Amino acid sequence: MRLRMMEITVGAFLIAGALALLLLALNVSGLSLSEPKQSYTLYARFENIGGLTPRSKVTMSGVLVGKVVNITLDPEQLMALVEMEIDSDVDFLSIDSSASILTAGLLGEKYIGVSPGAEDEMLKHGDVFEDTQSALVLEELVGKFLFNQASE
Amino acid sequence: MVELIAATGRAGLSHVAAFGRAAIFLLQALLARPAPLQMLPLLTRQIYVVGVQSLIIIVVSGLFIGMVLGLQGYTILVSYGSEQAVGQMVALSLVRELAPVVTALLFAGRAGSALTAEIGLMKATEQLASLEMIGVDPLRRIIAPRFWAGFLCLPLLSAVFALVGVYGGALVGVEWLGIYEGSFWANMQNSVDFVEDVLNGSIKAVVFGFVVTWIAVYQGYDCIPTSEGISQATTRTVVYASLAVLGLDFVLTALMFGDL
Image (cartoon, rainbow over all chains, first blue to last red; front, side):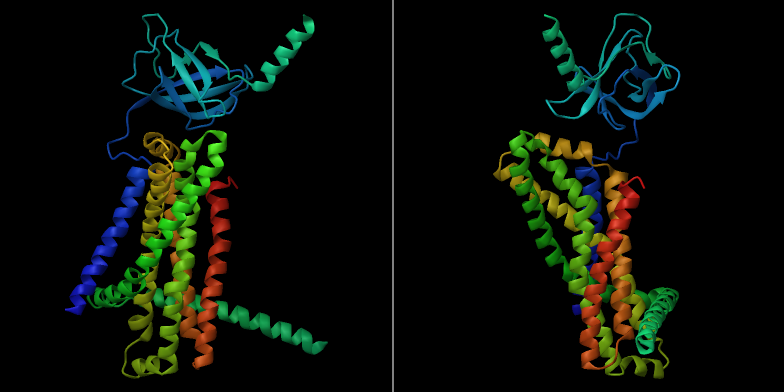
């Protein structure tokens, strides 16, 4: 009987441990068991990415539509080249959509906001956002402000 | 002078020899796997002793560490108006660092010392020798099940610790201090990555489980078979295991998160 009790508690312990790992994965890291979403790649060039990092969010009207996968420096145009993965069900970004780097809150993380355009043609896999707006850098703003003040 | 150099040499040699013995011992213990049917009851018993009986201390410490993290995080972050980030802070520090490390330290104190004392006493009362006499390999019968049980239990305990800690943090942050529940969990889920954080934390726990159990079992098996020797071996288990865990943690963190 004691052996049976022991086996039951050990079994319960093993299950509890495995369950804890599963809950950590689902609840804490937000992993979803559904198959990963299909996505396509878009690029955008920015003069200054501020604090944008890989895994930053890409949103449209505040709704999450993808994420930043890679940031490199374009050696020809000397601009930051940001590679984004956009969910395939978001296939209605017209070619004149614009991408801007925004900040969540005053000191929050940087993310990319996409504003829709008016053209009928849509951005496809591998396309580049023509219209981009760089991150606001506080020092540059202050610098401009001081320059304007001085010239007045 | 010459005596001093000789003493240094002696100490160095004996340390190297101990390392060698420990490595050979580990190899033998890993190879000396009893037949599966025979292993199972032995392993069950050890998992009960090593794992189930450590569960209470792990759950209680996890809960309180999570609650303290929630409280401290809140009081610091609220002055920047970003108390929503508490969830992220609690989850990341638990999953990446605190769960594996604190679990391993507690495990070394709770289960490791018991393993050493038990095996040491078996050696002192010549039970190990008697087993060998009747043709049972003590490595197989005594050491291997304990080793595997510790190796298996620590990652599970660490996962339990992290989970209980996160909910402890949520209890303090959301229920008592009034952080908005949605942003608490959403921030956490956005910032914690399964592969990068949860899996890496589990790998740490696996490594610690291996090292702590190895040290505990070896110290017991290698101890001087007197009451004094057992007490020394038990102390050594806790000290060596804790130092090894903390040192290895830095190395693992540097490899996993440090871009080295």
